[in-house]
Amino acid sequence: MNQDKSGVTVTHKGRVLTRMYLNRSGMNAAVAISEAMAIKLPALGGSTSGLVSTGLLYRVLALSQLDFRNPTSYELASELVDEAISMQRGASTTSGV
Image 1 (cartoon, rainbow, N blue to C red):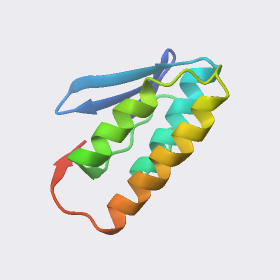
Image 2 (image 1 turned 60 degrees about the horizontal axis):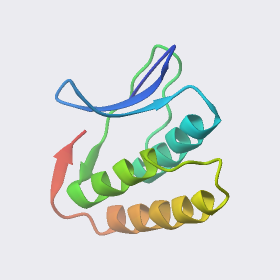
Image 3 (image 1 turned 120 degrees about the horizontal axis):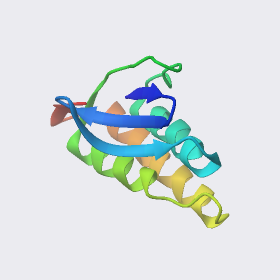
C-alpha cells in the first residue's frame, strides 16, 4: 500500500491492483482497507506492506469500489472489514501484497 499526492494504491509485485483517490470516499475506503489488511495507512510518500490471503484481497478490492457518499456503504464496509479480520485470525492460503 502506497500513498502519494493523488491518493492511496494497493500494489502487488509493482503493479497497481486498485487506487483510492484523495477525496472523502477514497480516504474512507483506504482506512477500511488498512484495517482489513491489519497494516497502518502509510503517510504521504510512504508505503507499507503485508501478506494477505486471496480471500482477504477480494474483500480489499470490494472495499475500494464502495461509494461512501451512500450511507449503506459504511455498513457493507464494516461487514467486509469484520470478515477480513476473521480471515486473518484463521489464515490459510496467502499472497504477498
